Length: 362
Image (tube, rainbow, N blue to C red; front, side):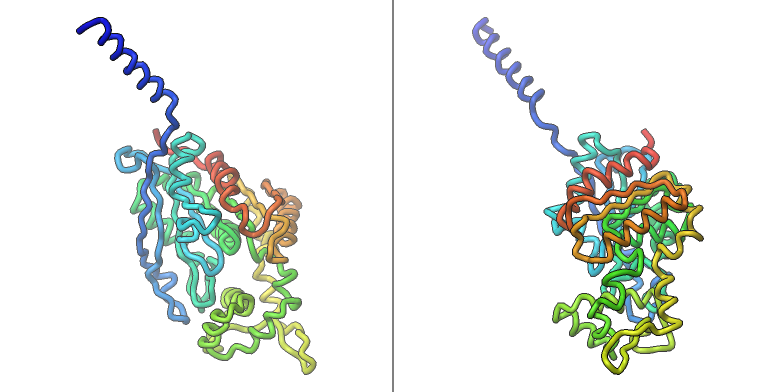
């Protein structure tokens, strides 16, 4: 080979090497699969919901060949949603499996399994709570789903390897599941959690109560949703877990308010007291010890949230946590209920769990 050709080849090899050295790191791909998990806890409901629960599971890059165990994040969607809220781009283009691939490849977070159940129903939301009307969703997530995940995947099958997070109704669910099932999860992040305290649009100031009080049959709920009447159906969903009544078909709820002759809402006891005690801030004192044992607890909320009860309710919940000596992080940020969700998830929530969950085996 001539010296000229040898020099030309060395130049080509050098150029390729420099190009490779400066090429951007390409994210390796994990896998996203959808399963149907049979639930005995939800099978016993009065509104005809299926006991086959749709669950999406993300496994990180390298999972199939590594042989390692991995921490698990349980991620809960909001009212009227499904697991697809996290995967189909509805939150500023968020496709969580793509986001996770990128962060894991970059070393920003450790490889993690993420489990995303679908938890809506004909009342728009289960609130991840136990109810004789809509099914025992709290037991499903904390017991059945956790047990299924630990048996079907290579997980760090202990509280140190499990975290739970959610947005809106899912934030409520993350907090209440940690409160009601101490020892199952070690870290909690509630993003714009709804329904922490009875205030603002959860009370009589909400005009949706009058419409909700008028519901007589399930068909009227469908009609209300078709007309875009969010609040009356959302109220019914809350009542189905806060004040269920199996002896009051066909809606199976008791109402905490009644209309007087002039059309004003009045408290209806004893249901009103039962309704008020449903909200997590009313149960914090008796659940304090379990929350105090968490490795990490965080809440955030946009100061311009469209649901009036969420910013003051979350702030009040944080203050009560502080009064009880429960370590936590609370952040009020510039945003509304949804508009910064993708950015918050990638820059705040996922790194939070990277710090607080046990790292996977190497």
